[in-house]
Amino acid sequence: MIRLLALFSLVLMWLAPAQAAPRHATQCDSPRPLKLALVPLKDPNTQARQYRPLIKGLEQATGRRVQAVPATSYGAVIEGLLAGDIDLAEMGPASYAIAMSRGAKIKPVASFRLQQGPATPDSRAYHSVLITRHAHPAKDLGQLRGSTLSLTDPASTSGAILPRKAMQGLTGVTLESYFSRITFAGSHDRSLEAVRSGRVDAAFVSSTSIDDAVRRGALRIEEIRILWRSKPIPYDPFVVRQALCPALQDQIRQVFLGNAEPLRRMLHEMGMTGFVPVTDEDYREIRMLYPDQSAHLAMPPG
Image (spheres, rainbow, N blue to C red):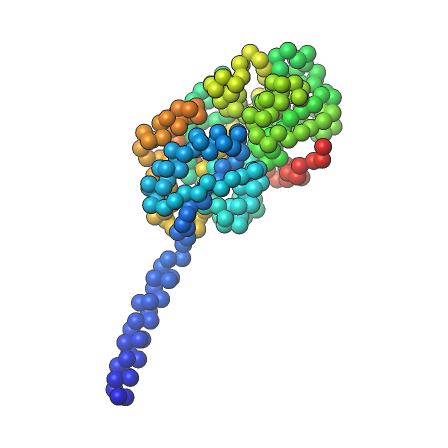
């Protein structure tokens, strides 16, 4: 009996390291379902419909369900990534910079390659533009002083952050001092509609949102006037949590950078021609701009 107990103890000693090894070797996350979030660039129902082929491709590549997480704001996506509640997200360049400055453990994987449009001449970058209705009497920025303005979201690169920095340099005062009233529309297409319908005098939007509205027939380029255009901005990154298992990250990356044929219809409808790989270095200049804008991330009253 004593010899049997000794043998059993010896077997346990041999098994213990073998059992511990898998736990040590799997210090990565393999969530089921995989949670995807998208910054609210347009009407959420339209956005969800357009991204269905991408979600289907991710599910086939990873062998798990992909749950689209509704995001009411850019900030909600940032908070979800910081909390580990979101595994994969499309972000604006500035929201990516904000998340990184707050210690988010994420990395860019890919970005859309843009189809050139009436407001976007480059396939790798877009612009922040200040627009008015073509019938509006203002023909330049100086004539907009005291007018009403629509911004997109406090953390939107082209719809808030870059305009704040640029207009401070051009006018010497804050947007709140220059315009009589500023509202946040929540998405670029809503800002466009606010200008088009006359609810505001002007808006800062992305050039790609103008191209998209023209492509859908929701806007004629002749209806608006562009009064200011930013320098080129690298387009939105898709990011993954660094804690995801390497094999899972590779499967996700392959969906974006592998065979694009299954996504062809989606890309065409969105005015994109494919995906390109991106790294943190592509957004270095945006990340350098962010600290100057941190005081403006809270939505002002009114």
